[in-house]
Length: 217
Image (tube, rainbow, N blue to C red; front, top):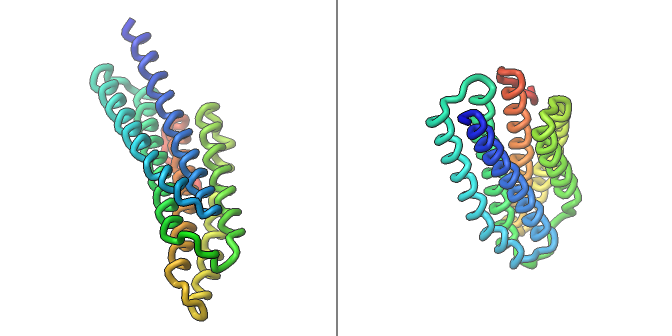
């Protein structure tokens, strides 16, 4: 009965993790849609949604701590609970980055973009692919998919560096320094979201292998 209860509670907390994954990824997508379309109302919606993501992370942490205290799990069960907390934290941070993108969208307002945002869109789509793939890898406990995420992360890092470098070159002849700063920050938020996907991939390796791996080295 004790084991059955533990497994029931473990399934429940893993379902909470999947919920925060969905909420955070959806929030990031909504924030970027607001950014591309200069939709202030949609950006404000992202900021409001973040409270739900924060509360869900707190709920996950509380449930895991209670499970550890009551059941005193060992080996794989303990690693699984630790990984749930870490992955939930990474997903909550992605929600924060969505909020930051929403805030920069509000700052930019209806001003035309000072340069093409195609490179930013490309890095965003790669980041979303990484996030979707790590959720699949986590559900399937698939380390092959997790390794692929690290390769995509390198591509996002390179795109980010090149895009920000090109934006900085505009400051010499462009008076809209404020927007250039905002666009650069949006790039950083997307890059960091991709980094969190890589973090979760590393957590998955820890869960399955019992060792810490740095996938993007």
